[in-house]
Amino acid sequence: MRKERRDGTFQKHVASAAGARILLVEDNPINQELAADMLSNAGVFRARNGLRQTLRSKPETRCLFHLFLQGGRMPLIRIFLSVVLAMFLGTSRCADLPLETLKLPPGFSIELLARVPNARQMALGDDRVLYVGSASEGKVYALKLDGSFRAGPVRVIAHGLHLPVGVAYRDGSLFVSAVNRILRFDNIRLRLEDPPPAVVINDDLPTDAHHGWKFIAFGPDGWLYVPVGAPCNICEPDPDRYASILRMKPDGSQLETFARGVRNSVGFDWQPGTHELWFTDNGRDLLGDDSPPDELNHAPRPGMHFGYPYCHGGSLPDPEYGKKHACSEFTGPAQALGPHVAALGMRFYTGTQFPQTYRGQIFIAEHGSWNRSKKIGYRISIVRLEGQRAVAYEPFITGWLQGETAWGRPADVLVLPDGSLLISDDHAGAIYRVRYEAQ
Image 1 (cartoon, rainbow, N blue to C red):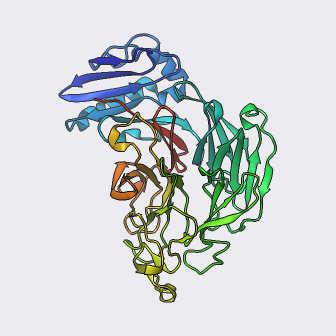
Image 2: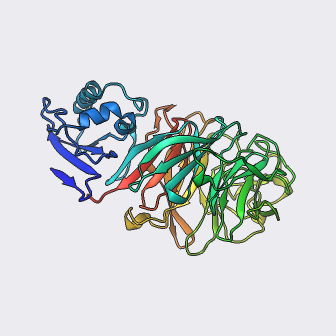
């Protein structure tokens, strides 16, 4: 059975083989039908001319070619098809990204959008240009997406920066965090081939590298929000300098503290309708495998304190600092997340492509634990809300962690205008795209 959209840009082919349903998803820039005599000898399906040459000549297209097995337990068929595909396509630059191990809800598919080394925060600018920060690479990237949101070449638009994790776009300019500095690249969309020099709008932030990398974003109020993590695992730092979420005017002026008691937030967003801030926060280490939880917090107004370093997870006094203040003095999390999952980027789902049950909910990139005896995280989770109350916390995509070995680490999520969801992965050096099509 074959289903095809009228624009010809997306094709699905389902074939039956020994009772298994095999779904092959192919999306390439030249609108060819999925077909060339591929696998015809194996009796899986026949194909038309053209795709074989495209797949061999365009590694980025091969990487968008994804195999799913739906229903039935057919490991022999999976192995057989993997071998045949490998023989047919040859080696691929995405061979080290086993997308087939990822598990998604029914109707969802995931594909590789682009390889971007050490990809961290993402921001979408004008003309469908995707900007991507990095950490250890010290670079900022730009990818032009076409009308179907497929990626063009990856360009380096800044390099030699100190942990430029955060990127935010506003009024034609790109803002980049670099630990103690916030930089601005003016008229960037017109100068991707010849990037402008950076303008330093603020260089008065702490220079500590420990928790010094920063996710940044413009709020509905027009201010740029910038977190400053604690320069330690657990300590009592200057509350006016650390463990906080700050905000400033776009020119870097009027720096002020919005929230305190935030150990290390690397992701936040504003709820549609209420325009209230929600953010992730990474809990402290060295209190055991299962304590404390990471947090999803809700800050409807400035001036709130979320407990660090005195109280963790809303109810756990710190063994060293907890005697100084009771947990009841602080705002607890809206949702306790998994302990040490390293919750990073988060976004409200504002699209309409996904089913109604996902709209207005929160997607979170869980980077994964580093200090548990058994690893957890390494997934995309979802927190479901009823109004402004969190009512469920559950996995959305799993599989980057296989046993105790992780081949990928989600770092950020971003909703595209067509309703698909991007995921950055700094470990695999990749950006994935998640789409939904009704069954």
